[in-house]
Image (cartoon, rainbow, N blue to C red; front, side, top):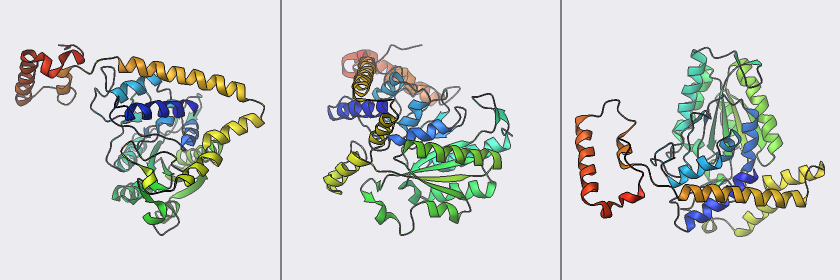
Length: 350
């Protein structure tokens, strides 16, 4: 949770300095880590864009985060995605896409595929016979999209093994929850589709963990979907393209951050257990920031993906039209290397 917070601070500032193009923080929503802790590492994950903590928990490291945000030659996405749009086959994390709510029906389909492929009694990370299920994250704003309803109806009628995890952080960009719907949040919608639903304090990491653990147990043993509505608060701006002071008072944000921040609550709990103190806090904080800055510097110093790589990964055999385009652009960069700043890119690999 502290790593996520430190990473967000550095990358947010980097965007403001023009060193990366875009960023979205998870300030106030670090409790999401509890949900990742309750899942098996083999369970597929679908994120929206504020699930960096869940991905970090699975072992996605700071170098991988920074390489993606800088779109350098080590970025697995080869620079084709906006920053914070992570994806990792190794960590069973499906690549994030910008259009809102598209991951919901995709996740329902993935869960149905698990069911059809009979992956219901496979050994989990502890060696115990267990099922697999999908977890799909989304915000309450995404629940206003049509894809939300399609996904829940599909999962309910086909009895798909999936956890729909809603991060209700109070705002869909500049639209507060009270202006998004008249009903009792998102939880009532799950009940309307015949889906068992849990509402949990999203700022309490242990509550999130317990709720997700119980939901997963039900999903894998009864082979049916569960909806979790995690009540939290978005302390930061929606993204670096947003200024939340235009639609909410500064004091509201300060009060939430002071009293109900997941990091503050977790620290107090650890301190009460005798496992944490101010000295440990400062040492840990300094070490984490040093690790973040090291990964940041390494990623920033690397070149961009090679120019020919833009023609890779779509076709097994490149169509003639793209062969001609590729030849044309390579001829242009050879002819005008200074104009195309070829030294900023990794060397051609073919």
